[in-house]
Amino acid sequence: MTQHTDGANSTGAWAGWVLLARDTVPHRWRGRSTPVSLVAITPDEAAAFSDDRVVHPSLSPEDELVLSLLLAGETITAIARQLRISPRSVQRRLVRLRNAFNAASNADLVVAAARAGFR
Image (cartoon, rainbow, N blue to C red; front, top):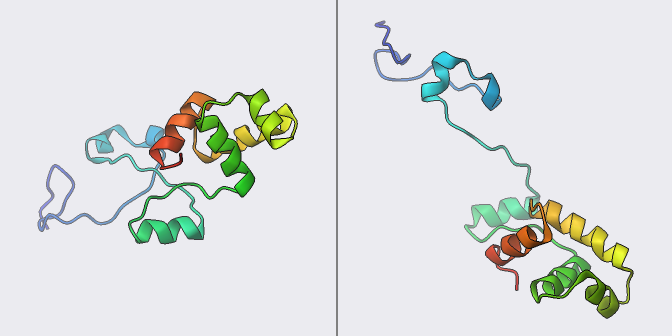
């Protein structure tokens, strides 16, 4: 078998794949490494992904309501007043929503939710 400088064998095939954290890839392999994201998803998300539908986090009806009010431009105080819950409860829901959408702020949450089709 002929050894090629790029690491493939004489037929151009690779022996396999190895999954490494990005900062642990040896320098000699970096030219042929591919960045990959490994994401845990729910069964519903997996079904939507395989059906080629838009995939977004599953939300409780209460969280959807908080999100819709935030998307409408309401403040935390106004959301709390409309839903008859405390502002702290609204803040806790917003933390969950930001985590679900991987958003750093409420502004990022609004952008991510709009991109995912929430109105």
